[in-house]
Image (cartoon, rainbow, N blue to C red; front, side, top):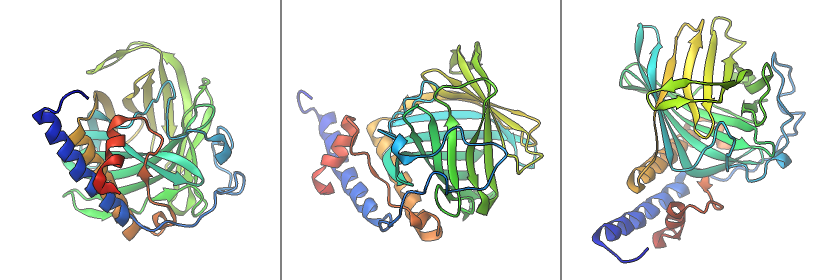
Length: 323
């Protein structure tokens, strides 16, 4: 970077301060947990209505936090905003989902996952704040290997995180969210956690749909996946649309009492200050997870991604106060 303008000096000072905050919070996230990767056939051995797309084997995950699936690419520092409506019991209300791809990775069941931070609001009131752990295998199947969703009441007050699940803990097992080589009609397990009655299944509805439009643009060659929860017989179908090179651009509902519909309204790389704030919020969420969730306490703390070439991440790691 040539020169050292006033703007650059302010940015450098912000990085130094943020580096100290990140280092301090990383020290508070919780103790490293001793664990072993679950056996692919032993973890979650019970049969489910939808079988895994492929067996879960940690050795099949190389550079697994770098998610390059054609229909679901995830790059750290990016924020996706989807807006629409859902019915949570009081009629249709404005619903917003903001997904941030953090600069952190986390070992889950012997696999390095990318940490995502997802915030849901209903009519402007916080409903859920979640950490999700996703990874890509050698065939570019994108897996979800665990979730820590904090729940809030209609007044935005924290009520707990009873739906937390982690692959390998309490017979939970992850599954594929987006296949690397989708085939029409193929069904697959997305996630199963018997202790909390969680079961999600996916089915490839279409491998190529054109003219899928949102306020952010129209897309061709879209992958369409139907998601169901067999344990919830009245839950209907959630249909998700994944545009090449973009990701999830639209969600619709079929026979779903909540009638959730969402469209992508924004995809952007956050500026430095916002990116740091989002990373810090994710760390705060993990700190609370260690305090309240026995399942989460079985995991190692998330870490800044050591392999990313991203300049922003490198500055965080290199900040003098972070050592």
